[in-house]
Image (cartoon, rainbow, N blue to C red; front, top):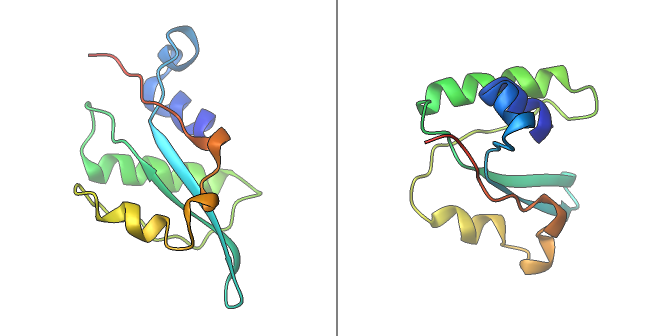
Length: 104
């Protein structure tokens, strides 16, 4: 999914220059919702939140394996950390920690 998002956001720069949005994903399981993910992503400097949100939603709908239920919030402070890790640090998926890289 992140690769598709990067391709739309950065075009050839995603592949040629390695541009990517930064992200961290935590996987949570509870009795009510089963497995689900919480994530945080950096918004590229060339976009406002609304443009990023539209691109994100468009790419989610292109993916057949992703669920379509989502809530996207603009949270510029660090309050997202405690929410994302409410079940503990073991929820973080190290393979899905990506440092942002974008044109300046």
